[in-house]
Image (cartoon, rainbow, N blue to C red; front, side, top):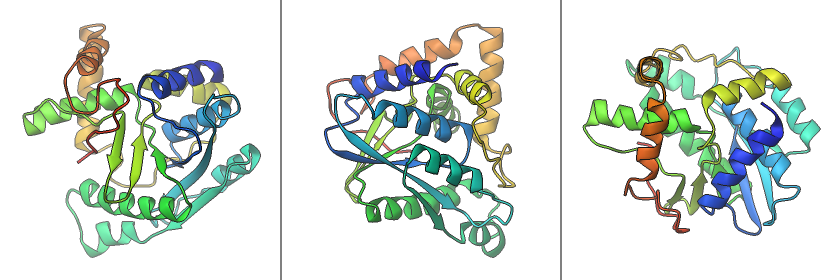
Length: 248
């Protein structure tokens, strides 16, 4: 997939859900994975000609794993002339060693978001872009149905009133397969997650379930996504409202 196609998906989301206003300073949460780097490329490309002027600032929360190497990400940000902040934390030690969490993802996510949001505010940003794509939207809905008994997923735009910070998800129309295609075509410097829980979570279980459902029933993922778009869930109307719900 070409960068122009990625930018087209992202621009559609920006326009449909009024994600960007004039003068926004947008932090891009960079995990080092394929999704966040694809989003960085797309927003960097769009800012040159998008009708509303905005700036971007890349931010990575370093959880403290010893084998995490961010040098390639630093080089990429330098090439793109995007400011890059790395937030050093001891989250990995707290979650896996001090606390010995059997289900570490929830605590890790809360601590990571806290560190990320603080860094974003210190950088003078008023918005943060998360790299959740279409598969993430549908998988989160399935997780809510299976494990919570409700029809729910995160919103395209979410205002966090306690932080006075707006979360946007510009990759929401893009399939994960297209992200993979873009990354492979352009040799994007993806950094593999060193987390020992990676690939062994409820989300991974649901990801594999959705993949099987879509193989056995071609188009089921798209129909689920259409159901979400046409639902009356808070934050999913295209009326310019920024009210929505954050991931639990």
